[in-house]
Image 1 (cartoon, rainbow, N blue to C red):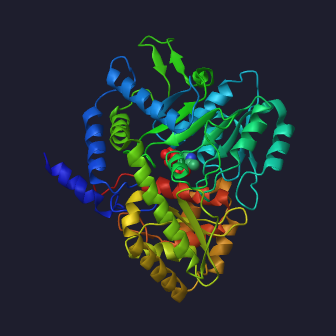
Image 2: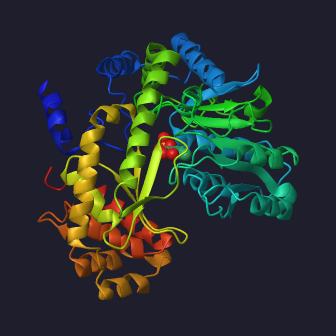
Image 3: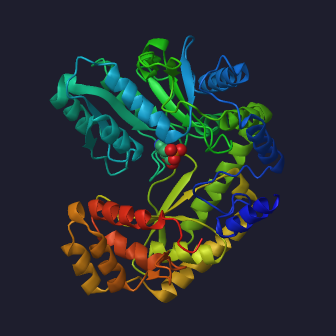
Length: 479
Ligand SMILES: Cc1ncc(COP(=O)(O)O)c(C=O)c1O
């Protein structure tokens, strides 16, 4: 029976490492084995409990209230503020949008107003909940443009149920002008949500360390809700985020109850109903074990690493920062001597995962780093790998996509992409082979695929990648 665990370990051999500070996306590594162990053991201890009914598992209610209390104190919430633990940033964002929509049953055609740098979770929320979204282009500094936001709010009037800002935005790592956004919202009686999913647990400690952090918490009048993820800079196991509200009245529309069926009365504060208590317990244990002092120490390491990376990027002439980072995210672009996608491949060859970002709204591709505390101890190696990767990318030269393939992509209609179109693209590019069993085989180096996708419009990228995922998610015939 234990054989399956060995098989699980074997299956994980090709996964990115989650420890060691060398994976600068998707995972957040404290670099503290004891913290990882405590989180893991707590997840296992509560894995079979069910958060569907917190009265049946009072430990879960207690841990949720403890976590929310910690978050509210950290984010300067006033007395009486409340919150909920959700399964992740996307669920917190979905609930913020759903709650805003349902707080205004009088509005027949609700709209959310978001800066163009918002996380795509808001697009998903608009899509799921039938809410319109108005995307307002940001300024040259990648921060929300106040005049354009004000004009959108004036134009849309009573239809607006939510205004959004980020602290910080994922792609560029800068904090929106939250006081001004919140004031625009509150003067119109609109909710203002700050998406601090990625930065919310690290920015308060950055401020305590004396760094210059623009105001964005509940200390800012007019901020009605904040999302902040524990499974990012809370260094908790995956599966927890907080959605915090300034008052119980603001949270109220988030609740769902149904007694109108023959079974138990369903009563939920989140989108899930039955849910494992494991992630909640994992987060609780990690937050209790680290406490304020632990997070301050980890944040110091994060920002030492960020400063060293910023200096390292400045020392490489081919690279430039997309924006000076306000937080723990660094994005840099290249000059014409090399390209960002090849640098990502070269870094992976050297044992570092860094994330490629495609061209968007006139800005070229870039390399994105989510810097964790666990990376600090390996920063010298990171900088050596970065310099070598840039040199190798320069040696290879920027990728030129075959003009025939570029024309083929251009000719496809994203709204009507068929499996045949996708097969045609695979065949034309010669990039992705189909194994004997008909399964997709990804090449080891992705720069050429990324360069090809970079030429496609966002709608075309979405269509291509959905087709791709649909192909991946099929049980193997050879199993
Ligand atoms: C600003 C922001 N909001 C929302 C999310 C979505 O979080 P998750 O991936 O946990 O659903 C992310 C994820 O990186 C993020 O950076």
